[in-house]
Amino acid sequence: MTLLITGGCGFIGSNFVRYWLEHHPEDRVVVYDKLTYAGREENLAGLWDRPTLSLVRGDIADLDAVRAACRENDVRLIVNFAAETHVDQSILGPLVFTETNVRGTHVLLEVARELGLRLHHISTDEVYGHIPDGHSSVETDPLAPRSPYAASKAAADQLVQAYHITYGLPVTITRGANNVGTYQYPEKAVPLFSTNAILGEPLPVYGDGKQMRDYAHVYDHCTGIEAVLLRGGVGEVYNVGTGREMTNLEMVDIVLRTLGKDHSLVRHVADRPGHDRRYSMNVDKLRALGWEPRYDPRQAVAEAARWYAENRAWWEPIRNGEFREYYDRQYAERLAGNAAR
Ligand code: NAD
Ligand code: DAU
Image 1 (cartoon, rainbow, N blue to C red):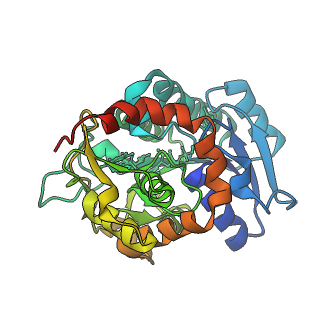
Image 2: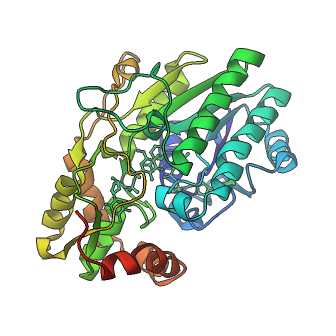
């Protein structure tokens, strides 16, 4: 079978491609990626000479290009990781989030409908909005997104469900918790804090740092998606996480201790507007498919921090390049200001 993996040069997509090639060597994988700032061919270094792996550079919002990539490669299954993914970037410049996450997903659905393909969509726990203490989201909960990023992902999630209901398109959806692991772009909290700590720069913690996240290992997200692809019910949605949350301050503590750095690097800075306090998901439905997470979130965060210490050659060119401009825009004023708890 041939899979079209959109966004396969990004963080989770590249981990998934690596995982799939290793565990399903009989399949062919076509990575379809626009190669935005977050998509990097080097995330799949060492794999490009495999005859079962190829790259098509393209935009998921380009219907003709998606159709051609699927036809020319005899694709049977689309797995959609492609997205604009950073909440802070969605606050600074939201329109591209609608273009890629909503229109792009819609284009994939149209091509899947026209060519009779199955589509698996990667959604997120952010579609549930922030969750009060004592509750963990189940798949049937209403969606209540609160950032431009989350709203675009919720729209995509619902379009995918609508295509199943209206056209009978064979779709599945996974809603992932915060992932950590190898090749995560340094705009996200764990790689940002790890690389800042390594460089001896301050760690900008938004607000009081007591927001709760389930920092799941990207490996467990990959095996969760695999379980759904192999055994999931058509038209069904599955949460993927560990079901165990920690505060951002606990996450920072693990990063600093793993890297042997001092807490004096922590700076409480002005909060993210509309910052969701807590995400929490119930993952029993995925467990019922025989899946279990391998990693505890504490172990996942520590392992990720260590990877950044051991792989400076991957992230230093990013941090010294285009990332600098974004970093200054996002943090210069915050870090110059007073602590905002
Ligand atoms: P990422 O930002 O690291 O990578 C995104 C990839 O999509 C990049 O390779 C980029 O080049 C590509 N892309 C962007 N726009 C495109 C377009 N218009 N056409 C084709 N390719 C395009 O993202 P990630 O963190 O790996 O997230 C992957 C998916 O998982 C996203 O759908 C995201 O919403 C979802 N998700 C992420 C997390 C997380 O913690 N990172 C958690 C749950 C769900
Ligand atoms: O929950 C799944 C989502 O996880 C994915 O859908 C998104 O694509 C992914 O970006 C991530 O979203 P978050 O906003 O939760 O992740 P981020 O790494 O940006 O932030 C994690 C927490 O850390 C959050 O509470 C905000 C906080 N934070 C983040 C940054 C970048 C800080 O305190 N300071 C920072 O500089």
